[in-house]
Length: 428
Ligand SMILES: NC(=O)C[C@H](N)C(=O)O
View 1: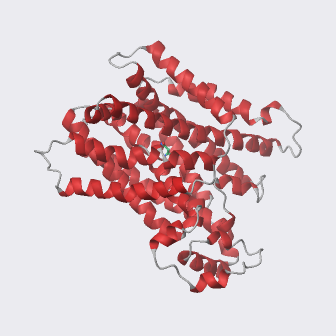
View 2: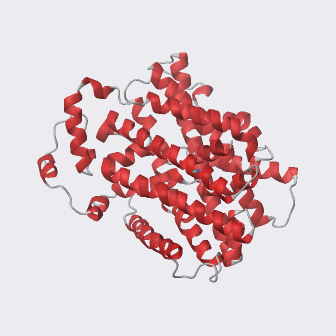
View 3: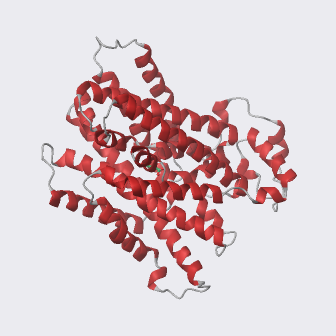
């Protein structure tokens, strides 16, 4: 159940942005970054578990408090709230956009005339009240294990369904483009076969960029890759609550749960990105399902994919809501014991707020970009590292220990790319 819950916390709308990230970074660079982010993600869970073992606390915000007092607690609480509200909004955004298309395809409505059930905003509100709110009112995360298992199986179905069937038809041509894309980061120029080749394609073929740095920062779209990946691997606010509910909990057992979840998601993320990318190449959009609309919205398989993704993201919302409620309780009502009216009221207010946000959300790439470039790196890389440095006593591990040097090194190498994103922040 814990693996299901953590897997469900990892897997969300991030998976839909990965094909776009791959199209912009190139397959090799994408795989490299995916591996780095997955390994660092698992490593930072190790750091969180170690800190929580030392101070005997199983809440992310409390670790912040132990490390830096109230500012640390507030920083962690705000980052968790921002990240998870961003994630939930992106899930409901998918409901808002995809649910009307599913209804349209089911009812075979060619020209919808403004029926209320085709209005995404109403559908978001209905799904929130009928499905998400009851699940979000559960007392413990553990009760959501079954829905998480179901949600993950929907994503497996999504993965099987998006395999690049188009590839088989024009194999030679596509293999050529694929090889080309392996070496080059500007696959957006290799439009589908229909388009004439861009004038500078020749130049691209023969000038393989030699430095990783220039590969990564040649255009701002490539710079989206790390925020999208960081967003996709965030599950850290859920780790300690899941640890608390684990039967016969030990650090080793929880790390094992985290490693299994991350490894499975790593494989699924790579396959989802590759399949989406090999189907559309440069035409892939920030949200993969969007791209499918351009083929045939009434195709049965695409309809099933939509239903699967809709189900999966809807069932993820309650999991992601738990840590936000906890963070709000820690920030606003510290030292208060469990109280049902407060538990229900926070869930209700949060869902209302997210519904309002979704009704006015600009687009999903904006959410990935902003959250991925701000709270996600804090929660995955920066906070676990600095909490570890502050909490683990110098006697137990001196500042020059390999562990602490690694933590500092990771932070030094992760932060500069994010600064570059802020410098290039033209999409806002
Ligand atoms: N749990 C989260 O914060 C986001 C999740 N990793 C996703 O890809 O949607």
